[in-house]
Image 1 (cartoon, rainbow, N blue to C red):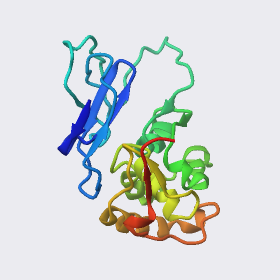
Image 2 (tube, rainbow, N blue to C red):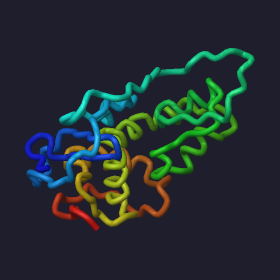
Image 3 (cartoon, one colour):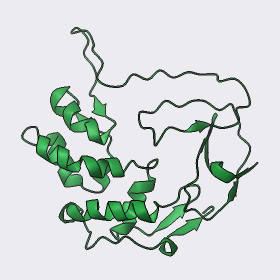
Image 4 (cartoon, one colour):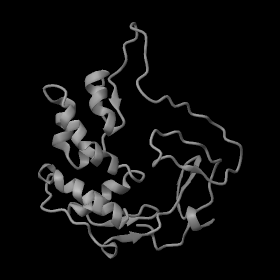
Length: 208
């Protein structure tokens, strides 16, 4: 199957064929991918930037996954297992206001110390939490881990290599991110400087 045009960036999972618009700064016009093995399904995720677009379903959807945003009330008699937040921008309030015990975090790959302080400090840190919201939002401006990998490359912590269909953030997005990362640079382990980087410095590969 040859995917071209605005659906040039395509990802496929077992039982799932998903597509998202290709960023304008990506020079490749098409990717050759194997035909999907099953019907396309809606995958209800909380962030619009992550939510995929069903692409050419081969059959009617076979599953509808419910999604309920925000905290859910449960009976007092129910003893839940340890709960972890899945969203960095909500983890502080979930931890200190709703009894969460941890977070499945993306931001902690960049500023682990500050994220640990948010979750396991002596008490709530609302000012620190507010100060990190814009960085957290930027790290999810494209489906994860695009922004994270771009950020780590900008900080000189990983090689700037992306395997298609993942591509680095655009220059405009990198310029915004460089300001946010520079503001917390002292908290980024191993980072000696933050660079916007040029497009040609990133290497895109089709397969390993």
